Image 1 (cartoon, one colour):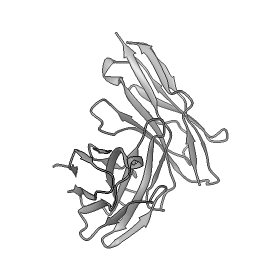
Image 2 (cartoon, rainbow over the protein chains, first blue to last red):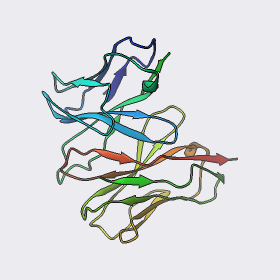
Image 3 (cartoon, each protein chain N blue to C red):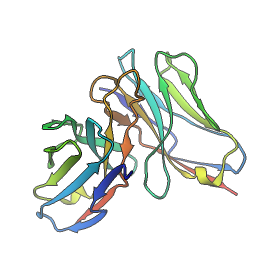
Length: 116
Length: 115
């Protein structure tokens, strides 16, 4: 059981380049999320999805796009990378909250992105 | 919108001693969940403990316990019998239920357990 898998783990981009981060989960979770982690700021929500084909903006969505064409996958795209997007990106997933689930989010191992 | 504040950027404790990490939050919600996550040097985020706001009893998980003060909007984490493996970043997080399970995180506390 792999849980939540992110690819790639590391990437270096030049300003203006584009890239896509892929998140895959094998737990049949309805909800998926992309966070970014910066020193002293904790994790901040970029975009999230409550089901296949649906996405919504989080706290810091500017400069990012997402897609969830399949329930198990959640893609994060940077169309024109900027140095301010240098960060560690985390994908997470969870069941929808009900009386039998704890609401726990399960995280991937993170992807370190550097934009020069 | 909710905010979560962790006022201790760094802390240290001797092995086998007890340490308490502070967390305060601001919300107008009455029903919510609070979490502590641990991030060791491997970067993996690991759930430590969870508290439901409607429960008055403080949550405990082995050596980890919380002091939940709803009126004061305070949610501190106590680690007893600290171990070297407890060295990590600790994040306090808030969740409004039935609204996408989104977590709002504090800035984190870096804990160093010294031998």
